[in-house]
Amino acid sequence: MAEPRSTINLLLSDLATTAPLPQAGQSVVIAVPDSYLTDERFELAGVEGLAIQRLITLAHNATSLKVIWDTAAARRLLDSPSVHPLAAVALCLNNAEHSLAENAQLPLDAFERARTKLLGHKLATDMFSDRQALICLDFERPSLPSDLYEPSTRRLRPEADFESLIDDLVYAQHGAGFKAERLSKLRMALAIILRELLENTDDHAKTGFDGSVLKPNSIRGLLVKRILETRRLPNRAATDLPPVPCLEFTIFDSGIGYYNSYRRQLLRGQARGDPVAVGDKQADLVRRFELGPDLSVETEYAIVLKCLERHSENAIPDPRAGHRGMGLYEVLRALKMMQGMLEVRTGRIHGYRSFLEGELRIQLEPETSETRPGMPKASLLDVDRRMLKSPAPRDLVRGSVVRVVVPLA
Image (cartoon, rainbow, N blue to C red):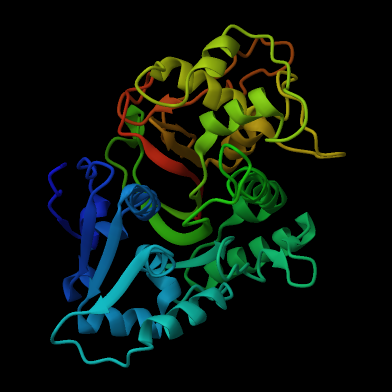
């Protein structure tokens, strides 16, 4: 008889670190103390999206998951769930059991009311809070935010609606003291980028490898946050400059991730129909190996880049009639014009490209290029190695997190 495993106890704030997650098959209890509300780590750029991804991974791997809330934390979530994204995602996990600490004094239906309020949230374009979240649920009581989806058709809104949403968000920054002039001029490109990233989750992050609906959790979302972004590779003139005030858009999902999505297409053709023929040197490796220790991180990195370029390469035809996507090169080109930044975390890969004012200009095409002089090469740099493309392997996580950062100054 196998020995029973002990219960793993964590704080919700522990997910804001890079400490290894518990092994799969464990029972997990997450405490949400009142001190969670004042944890300064969640004010940092990029932390909340990665913490959400770790929470989703933990929930997927756990045999049971309990979340225990102190009174003040639960009450604040009930009052304004959309401005606490990590706690909001915890509230929406289908396989999590929620309860109040022994000293808590709240109605028994507090969590259900908070969940209902969260799923009905519309982006507050005055940005009274520095952050807010829109949550999409695709399994068990599905719900799609009306800011992103047409309620009548349940389809993603057209590009014009996304451009209007960006207009409203940019205009709101004027009241916060930011001119955001460059962002105003390039709002159409930003709207297309965000819609494309959300459409990617709509197409690839709602089903498992076999094409069935993801269970127990099929969750996606958009975070909008005003942040101070630190330069990764400052040039000499920018070494002592303060961080850059930015608007951060984070798109996350609980799907099978870039590599397994590519592999699904390679073997099954969008998990249906005939297999897609791919003629490159990685194809045999991808056919043989799921994402895991038997697959090199270099091969995974190559596939992630191929996924990001899928609309401008012919290796995997896009079966959607008339679909127009941007691809990694076009995204990077637009972000270079905005002096923005892109970050991607999926599987074991954590890559980025930054064009913030004062950053070193690397991985650019030479000015002598006949087609793309001075434009970004379609590649990602490793978050830790910074100047290198070669990826440092990380813990395997569920789904994907893509962060688009644009300056407000």
